[in-house]
Amino acid sequence: MPKGNYLTAILRSPKTVFTLKDIALLWNEPVSGAARVRLNYYVNRGDLYRIRKGLYAKSESYNKLELATRILTPSYVSFETVLAKEGLIFQYYEPIFVASYTTRELAIGSQTYAFRKIKSDVLITCVGIEMAEETSIATKERAFLDMLYLKVDYHFDNIRALDWDKVYGILPIYHNQRLIKKVNGIFQKANQKTI
Image 1 (spheres, rainbow, N blue to C red):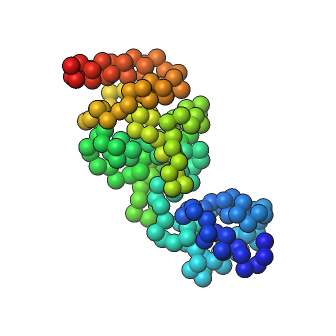
Image 2: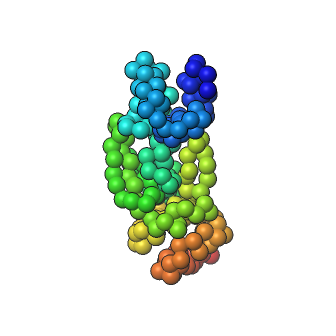
Image 3: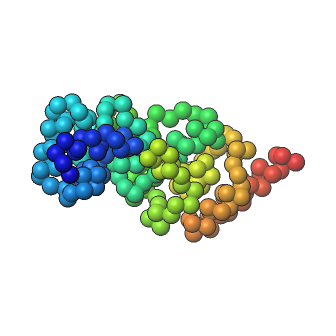
């Protein structure tokens, strides 16, 4: 890549958050000491913002949901973050909740990221996951099932917003009889209230 095009390649990307590997792919070169030196130069000049070691952004106003799925991969935004946004729960939660291969909580700047472990064959299944603004986000039906998978007695304030055909279409990926039984019970109660 010609010398002047390194920063331009980053700035033209639709992403707001980059890992070192993302940048190496944009530059079409391996992760090397020279790439790290070049990135440090851009950070020191103020052309790029270092979020934390190995994570960079175009500016301090990066997409926090995008960062959530770049910290640990594979991962996707789910649980209370999606449930509150979609109106299934009415409580507000400050942290961004993410499904991942491990349980961990990190504070970056003023934002907390809460990662919850979900089994790997569920984590890597794309059913009920959408891409929006460079971020993998669970649909409300997938977030509903993720939450029940981890917390069987979780209380939802409004399940009328669910598309039950989608719920039952996603349910088999969990391979969990307890979850199937719980979803059937919630579905039956929801139908009794509408009659």
